Image (tube, rainbow, N blue to C red):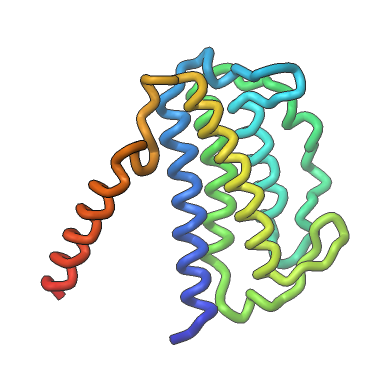
Length: 183
């Protein structure tokens, strides 16, 4: 087995999973709710999406050949809520993820140990991937938390429902057993 290829496959799946949590959160929210923030120091989901997209476009554009902090990026502007609708929010969200996924799928196992710069600091590609995974998971976690607070009892769980762990485990084990017998 080629570990580099396997790593890239797994990391693409993980980024897709993180994106999926964000997608499912956004899909539960209204136009008004995407702009809600707890206080002036907190970010709304609209701001988090703008920031993540700006970061993704900057970091993953020309990934192997130029610093991840691009001159065209205006990070401070990412923290101004200027998104006007859920459809615009989704466009901004998808733009960033498109750049990220296209770049990841273009990489090969030999690229993982190349050096790239982010804000003038040198990183191995594998290190930069992990750095961004942590960053995006952190922000999507914030989005999910905000969504849960806003929707309260109307929130559609994105994971195992509270009090249903044993049921979930039993169903999962039975499904895996059936799947193994098919092979």
